Amino acid sequence: MRTFSTSDLSRKSGDIIASALQGPTAISQRGKPRLVVLCVEQYEALTQAQLDRRIVGATAEMPDALAGDVALAIDSFLSTDEG
Image (tube, rainbow, N blue to C red; front, side, top):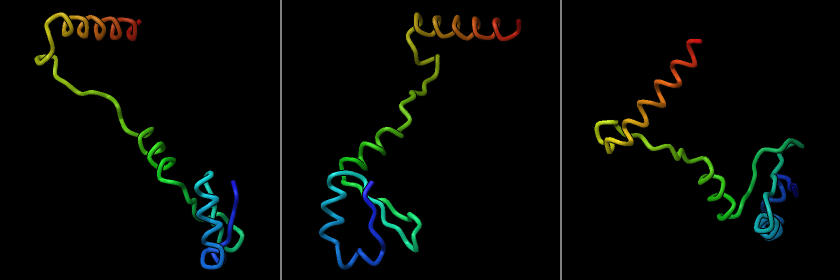
């Protein structure tokens, strides 16, 4: 990851932008990394990866066959957990 200092922000903004378009770019302050600059596509990929894709529903709203399968799976899980 390419690194720039906070003082580079005003002097080398074009270089920082060009670097961030190619990959994550670090901005350091007093020798320690403080920020990361990303292009929009990389940011969106990170935020999409963190979405919780689980679906919540009530068994009363499920088709009978699916609700039966869920009940069997829960019973099976609970019976193996006790042994």
